[in-house]
Length: 362
Image 1 (cartoon, rainbow, N blue to C red):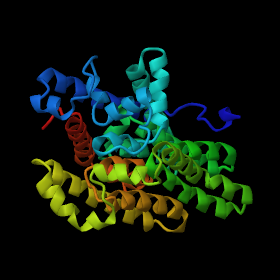
Image 2: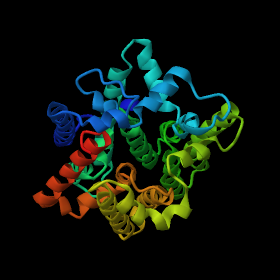
Image 3: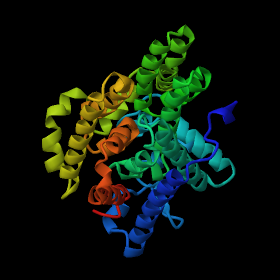
Image 4: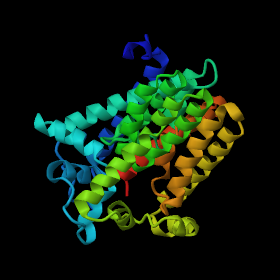
């Protein structure tokens, strides 16, 4: 039964960390709105619905998800921006469509995202490999640059929760539930398929053929989405073609990343992205050096960060690194966050990144 693997008593300190983190993100949005949204943000996000007290939570690419929820994916592969919807996977548009049935798509999206982030915090805390480190793991996730995305009306919180709980269920031998969550993750985000790596290693260690089959669930989810895109667009390149429009031109752009980040982004954003990328790589090395027992988590973290950098874009590295939950574990285990200035700096960076994404800052 599900109740057998859910926490009997959600740890008070973990929930407190989540509530404090979410409160900070929401307060940043409210203060940004009170200070006045720069005029440039209106031009940069012409499709964003500005109704409601916390409408910036629906900024960034929310409009594309909403478009898919209302109109579906375009038939055939159109030219130019019209093919951009194929860069987005269908799970989150399905959530918005369900919310639209009751006339509250924005509210439903926010509630689902926040509940997903709570489940993610509980999962990261529960899975912390070091005994007694649950509270530290929760705060590490809160302070990890990029975790701000878990508070937005996006699939990030739910996919992180599904990823970490799939691994925890697999560890305890509950492979049917792990496969179900893995299938969801594979269909929710492009990098969700990478959770198949730790699942496969866990299945190999348990020497169970059924577990190895279940570990492939994220791959099945991804394949189903790609098959649907192919059927709808008429070409197997629908996803990659759309990604190119977003500036993700693959490994060939890797050497250009530092220069692009420094010259293509205004002011502080480029150097900040580079600093986050360096931090993510350093944490990946730290996870790998923890030894064989950490190997599934190291492989997953390296894959997430590596694919993000190899995509040819560095501007989403913080968001992608937050999905690599083993980075929060190693940050908590190193006790780096025991130094209050480091923890406060991480939270401050999250606020800056959130304000930048929502165009509350230039």
